Image 1 (tube, rainbow, N blue to C red):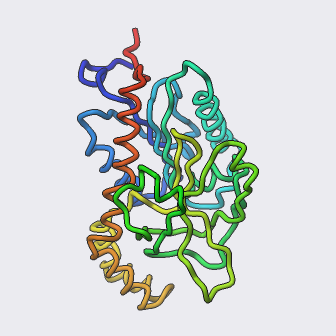
Image 2: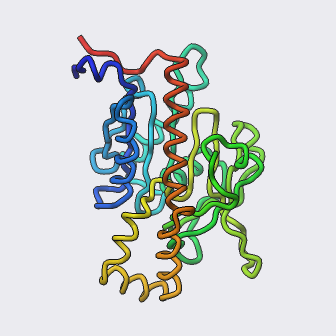
Length: 285
């Protein structure tokens, strides 16, 4: 591949799309956020589950790995093995002295896969689907997390999932140096463990169980459509729909999360790449 002079001066970012070819809002939101950094970022999307391909580690500096459908503990033995191989390569690269660091953000399905792969906690089905907007409570580490800088305590997220991360393994966390950054909403009337909602694996790698890319304006439009509204009310009740619409309309909630987490991650990663260099991609002969 040949790069123009303008592209040669840009940092290279890869998006690992795990949506299995299913149309979704998540990828649109991720692309929109990346493109807001278009003066310094050049990106490419890899349809991991459809094409069975992962990015060449040497060709990119920053990675965002998306949400997706299905059981995060299962794959077809091909795309998932390629994904885990890529993940191991990133981890080993960042442990190797002299190698330029690679920066990664996991979202939802990717987050669950990474937790499962590293053995950080239990990954399993929820008793019922999490659907809508919910508070996330930062831990002590989360309150000091630069990617969360500017968020309230608790802060509101868009959360749509059938699986969850629970029962963190303290020894494994300690062994690899990972920290829990956020926990599920407090439910004193429910005798269930609060799920882990965000983890920092290392100075270069972070992940969230929720969807930090969620665009409140786009979601408002989507959930206002009569057929979608009727479906949500049928499956989750009118009270859930009303709360969802209220939280999406509140500029201090999902709007703020959207405008904070991924932009903070990208800003910090870009600064680190520029400081530590060299850039991953070079024009090929």
